[in-house]
Image 1 (tube, rainbow, N blue to C red):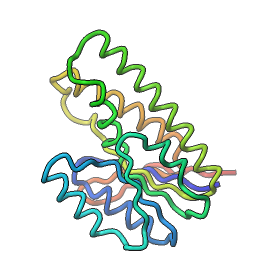
Image 2: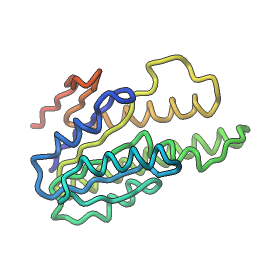
Image 3: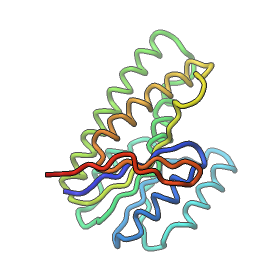
Image 4: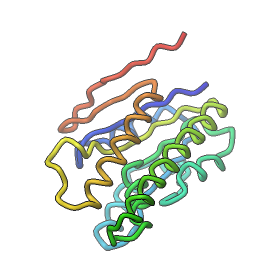
Length: 189
């Protein structure tokens, strides 16, 4: 059974670089990228991430079907690096549209249940593969309450997703100003 490491923290805290450093020991790595190049700045950010990674790592782009796409990864993979669950969650939330109605809130609750279920299934698949997994996410609930319903829905949904991932992870690191703090070490019997 592989080990799962969750890496969280704020924006520009060094999460992705730390995740990549954590994965360097593995020979067969699949880097699962969730970002979409929707504008020039994001395209440049994606290019910087790609340039920083070892060339022998395989990249799997998965902006919407993250855990389903993870199930397509072959059994000879030693490590799967997901960057990042927060972006994937935002991508999925934005598919609901931006008109906030009671029906939107119901769809939002339904989406959260769907995403949590997909995560459970994806983690079970990875455990069955016996490969390690490094998952990057953002910690978005430490600041002020978002002023918009969309922002509050995102914060709450990602908070519950992060709780599930942290519960299932063997290790959890929080990055603060580029410094990794190990906040969970799970001992398996």
